[in-house]
Length: 98
Image (tube, rainbow, N blue to C red; front, side):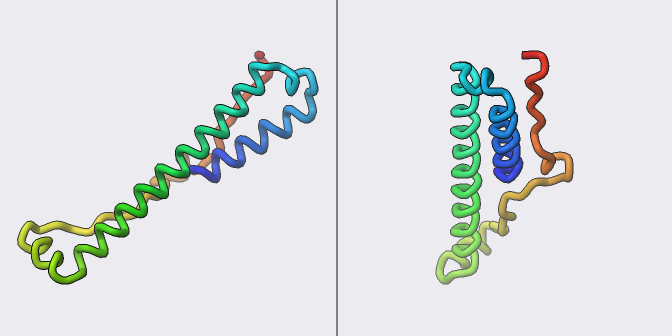
């Protein structure tokens, strides 16, 4: 997901280089900053989730917590990954109607 956002951000920056008046526009600058912030938040959240799942899965295998886990039938969880090819596609941003 964050690769998609990174690619989308690169595309937006490339478009802004081709249209200097767009680059100078305050709204476009704010949009670019918001996209960067969103990309960072998603990346952080994904990493936080994967770290939490890794710690949880480790606890399931380590004594003595593995005894409690087996009593309550806790099962391991998968790390976050995009579920489909559609989810992996780059986000398309169209500025033609702006």
